[in-house]
Image (cartoon, rainbow, N blue to C red; front, side, top):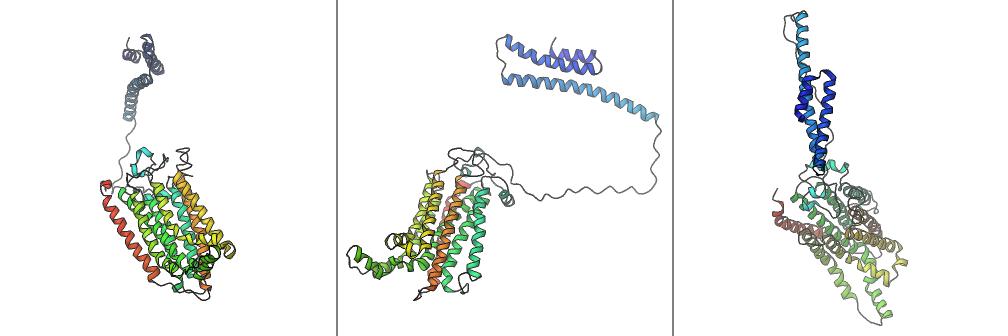
Length: 455
């Protein structure tokens, strides 16, 4: 007897609960008979065959169960109709206007917006994928509200945001104290002596702000993602030049290396040279800002090019090109080697070298992609290299700020006083750099159009 025939036989011949039990037993018997048949004909039952037999059993049992329920419903419906015929009919409603229906229930508005389910690396565009980060990606084309909500969710960008947003608040408070609460002495915030500090503050705050913006809103679209990271690279170059402006006015004038008489005496004692150092040092002082300006533009171009497909080692290139502007601090390093900076200015010596130690550690994590290279997928949310890179760059800028503030105090106390900075030599340079970097970013965005056709 076939499986379906056995079910019909049971259904027609057995009443009540015994019928349901026999239906289930017959269904199980039918599923196992298929497996035994495959063994007899020397065919191993595969997982798909088991699944097919179980699905067939469920389908048959559900169909027969539906038939049983249909009979029960029909019988119960007939009994209810007979009872209704015997019971007295309810009295008619009183005359008058019909009652108003109750107002529809309003659900409370949802106060929390979610950015959607997180995706794996093979579910997002190639431009989204980070090396050795397997999960925690947000979907493309999130709304701005969803992007903001994602900073409170465990994505692989969450700590990238917080490791720079918290330092942004810290530095904003510190610069506010220096510039507005007379932390730099009795000078008003618009005094010319504070112009380099304004430039430096704008560079630091803009770098952290653009980093936070790029990491939060990078999933709006492919074109906006490229634009945000181009702006991020430009802000880092802007910060590097702003640091050079602060060095040029606050730190370099106090170095013996850049004082003609001290350098001439050193060359005469150590090498026996009688050299007039005034012309070379004057040339250096005149060229340091233009050279740093050109390096800032060149570094931005190189970093924007590193986002193209032909670049095999983008992180190494970005790390290298951002080390180039740090060469503007070479006079401080030479001062420590030739003129015993540790004894003359221990604060500058300690903070300067500790800053460069933090920068070396940050560069190591950014290039090596440790620890996620060792265990891909384990550090997707917490502890991957970009978060460590953010932490150590924050520490380096924090130490830098200490010796820039110390240089400002020495600049104000110098006797005879150093020449005051000019607007053209500080703010003028910064505005011109913003215009040049804006032109570079616009050029790269225009060439990025084919990769962002979906916009």
